[in-house]
Structures are given as structure tokens and as C-alpha cells.
Image (cartoon, rainbow, N blue to C red; front, side, top):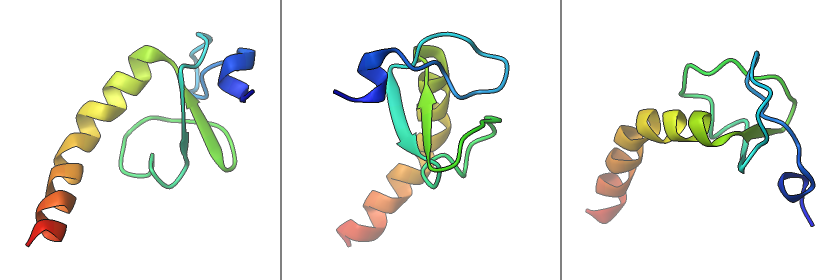
Length: 68
């Protein structure tokens, strides 16, 4: 049983909603979210959606790079 299932709150500064996803801090480095935490970052649904939108372009570029 992980921390998300136990009910950890969102790591974004100023947010107190419960988390639905966890990411490594390295995965979050390209976004503009202000988070607290050392290795793992926990995101609520809204902040996960926001991160996913900003990360989509870099993921597409990474796929193109590995495809060729």
C-alpha cells in the first residue's frame, strides 16, 4: 500500500487536496509548479492535469527522437 492510497496530500505549495499521483522530482523539473519534498512529489487531480499539459510537448519530442 503506497502513500497515495493512505491519503497523502498534494505537494504543491498552497494546495491541501488529497493526492492521486506520485512522480519523481526529476520528472517535475520542467514544469512551473512550486512543490515541497525531497525525492517524491504527490499531485492532486488538478495539478496532475496541469503538469501533464506542460509535459506533453517534451514527451512528444522524446518519442520522435527515439523512433528514428
